[in-house]
Image (cartoon, rainbow, N blue to C red; front, side):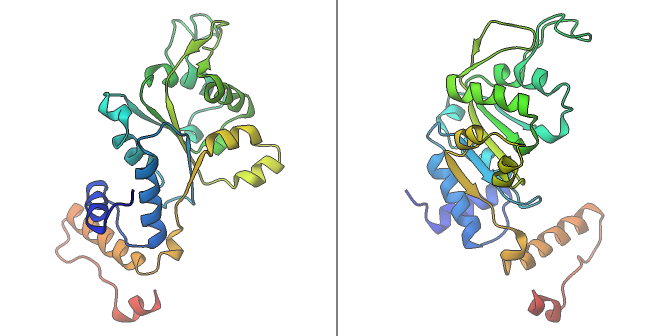
Length: 228
């Protein structure tokens, strides 16, 4: 069911979304439509386009949120390859040198909630295989364990990587891509958002002025606005 303009504007204000571009509004509408389901979602778009707000909307308007399920966001690109499996799936005591005790991973902690995997295109191939198992069976293995554990987690992922290219180059699993991309939401690049660029400039100029106690925010000249 499509939300009317007033509802969408209220939602944009709630989440600090600036702009009226049609593609941006379509991405928000899609997020609201899929929120009540448990479908996996893949958000694609360039760096800096605001992909991280979409999973937050999806969780907040989901049944998982109503049942007090957790929302956890992880930047997969910022976790070293040697520890990513432990961070996501946990580990058993003694499973590696520094494992002095057992550790719950994000899939265990977020049980019943939503897990946002940002920069999912940066995951190592071995971790991709573990993630695929979770999506297919709802099961995972802690590092150093042979005992499967169940988890009920909804996965929302995001990437700025061209996944089809990564698949051709052997850097991303095709089967995982199709599991993640049950619903595909594309965030438009800033350069294609027309007058939104002016609105964003004014927004960030006002925030900067407030933060640094500048009496008069920087403004664009009429000529500059015409160029944009």
